[in-house]
Image (cartoon, rainbow, N blue to C red; front, side, top):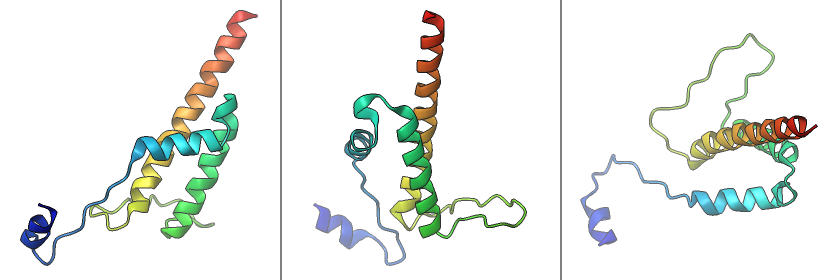
Amino acid sequence: MAEALEAERPEGAFRSFSLSLSLYVEERREANGLRHGDFLRYRRYCSARLDRLRASLELRQGRNRFQQKKLPVVIRDERVLLLVLTQAERAWSYAMQLKGENAASAVV
C-alpha cells in the first residue's frame, strides 16, 4: 500500500513527517526534571533546547534590532515541528510552575 502511494506522488511533492509526540514528550519530561515535579528545571531545559533548535535552523536573532522571523509555510525539516512543540512545552511548564506556586501560597 505504501509503495502505491509513493508511486502516485508527483516528482515535486514533499515528503511527510512522522513524529511520535507522546513518546518524545514523555521521554523529555522524565529525563529533565518532571520525575520530581521540578517544572522550573524542565522550563530551563526547554529554553536551552529552543536555543539549540533555532541555531540549527538558522533562526537566531543576533544583536540587531528585533525582526520577527516567520516559520516557512512549506516545512522541509522536522526540526521546525520540534521547535513549535518545544515552545508549547515551555509554556505548559511555566503554567504548571505558576499553578504550583499559587496553590502553595493559598495554603499558607
